[in-house]
Length: 335
Image (cartoon, rainbow, N blue to C red; front, top):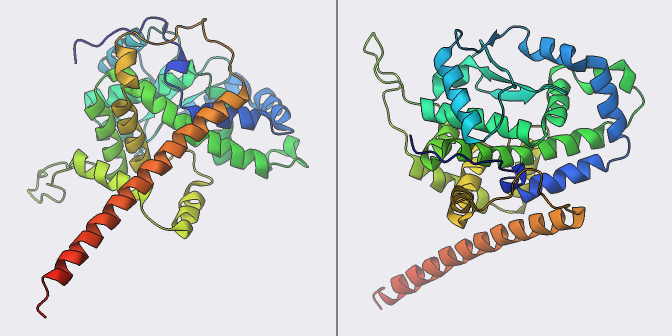
């Protein structure tokens, strides 16, 4: 899309998910959390974080992966964010990217992710990671990634602290923050199909066509509409025990399932909020009003209440159709 709109001085509050804000406020309120943040930041420091996450990576620039560098520049321009956050590529087949750092956050993209996605899908990933930086997420995401890489219990300066509540709340917030940054990725690319197609490919790969040997092991097709149907079924289907399993499956994960993320993006686009931002209806940086925790909780509660109501409506429709089919079958039965 060559006609992307520059979102002049856009504030992160324009795209932040209400559940993200509520979860972050809750995380900050946990006793001992501030001390854990302070100790981890002072122990690792900016240099330690850079060695941990970018020590074996290549810094992108005008003469190093210039096409990716140019794409990143376009994302910065669209989001009206000054250049200054470095971009690295690291060689690994794992499909992932991250924005990390305390004072000077930087972005690291795995080569496996670049190989999976087309250019416009890569744009949404760059915008997603920039969204983390613009929202001030990186202090907490860096903590979560250190937890996964090193383990909080392996850090002697945290001995004796009650870490489990912090870990659970940290990962819960991290998953909600991904929903916010997915919206930032969509705004940076302004192509809903590309944004949701990226989620589809991260969930199940992409067909690569017939190989040089003519084996065609993955010469197939993927369908975004079918993926969105699957996402809706995952969100609305199942019993109470299924809900428990859904929670346990992600309790110590940093990311929601890609089906959930695609559904959230689809819902946000259909709500009209995405298009209102493109039309210029969004808060500017520096003009954001103070938001009490109660408002974040209320908005998050309203959001999920609407989701639950829609799910029940869908279940009701299925039951009505089943009843009608059964009635029709009984009427047509010979007596």
